[in-house]
Image (cartoon, rainbow, N blue to C red; front, side):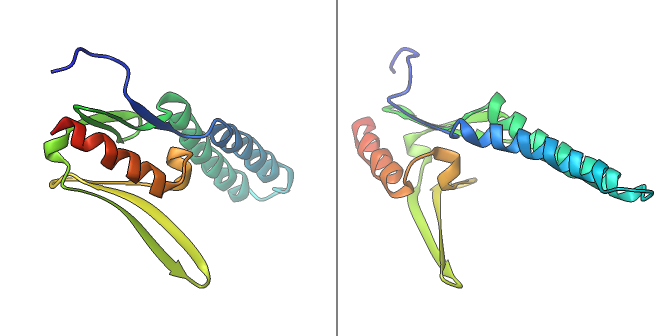
Amino acid sequence: MHPQSSPAHEWRVPVTLPVAKLVGAVVVAGLGLLFAGNDRVQPVLAGLAAAALAGWGLRDLMAPVRLAADPDGITVAQGFAGHRRLSWPEVEAITVDRRTRRGLTAETLEIDAGDSLHLFGRYDLDAPLAEVAETLRAVRPAAR
């Protein structure tokens, strides 16, 4: 067992993403109030949308690291701002799922841990998903 040290590899949300979400929350709230007139529902809906965006942005600030790997295993983001540690034997598969629909291609990094499936998009990790999967596979054999 290795002493607790910094992970060999770490992927996090890009810095601009939570900032954009928080700015978006302010803009949505402001537009909801600006164009509400006598309508009481519109500011409430805008406030709810702004609160959701702000919460999403705060989560990115509180837990920016979505995935980390070292020779002992990986740490994945779980829940609102928590993390879960998985040893390499718990990880059954690491794949990149590509789906094309209406000319747009979406990629998802999938980490299958048997009882749980952890999904990451490009903006969760701020790196090409195929490269992340390659790095994880390269780190994994060192643990065996």
